[in-house]
Image (cartoon, helix red, strand yellow):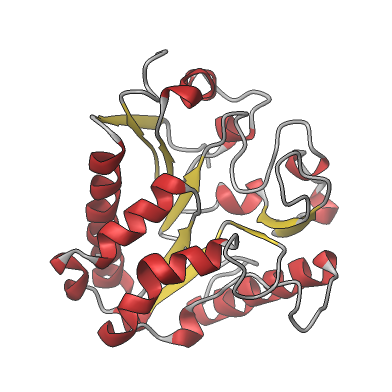
Length: 258
């Protein structure tokens, strides 16, 4: 199936963008739960992504969601010890997840990527395989004939170099894999942005999500936003697309070169 063409929604500034993402996410989760009783969401890190999670935590609309029937995943993670302040999981817990506990969030449905002090130790390949197994396990629960569960919304930040998740331009992890090696999670070494070792979903997983939302703010990213939206190319962000819908949710700064 061809990916959905991208739609661009422009907001005045970072705060209004984050608030809009939070509001959209509640609506999308409720729609998914009305359709199939549960929802799957892939979270992202970064300043605007974390701000959106904090906005959601403070929204009265969050109480409308059955959080016991939401699976939360991550698109990528810094391969650091548990609780490290630079881990996306740590930031998401502080911004949102701790607030959802009283609202019924099931800890078993919070699928954090393994840490470097986890059961696989300092072996990112084993950690990536463990997360791939977790995706496949929940896919079986979903009744999906494949290695990935239903992902209703997959949130992505976009770096100033055009990377998404931890798939950096020109880096081996961002290259398409063969049909015989259709990995869902990869270990990323020697990343151009610290820390150098990371875990990331692959583009095959990103493009399997029902909806992909690229959330971008700031004039520093305007050039890559314009390039990515011009069509699929060398930038990983240009190839990030959902099956049903692809949204670029941006502020005026990020949209200033289109």
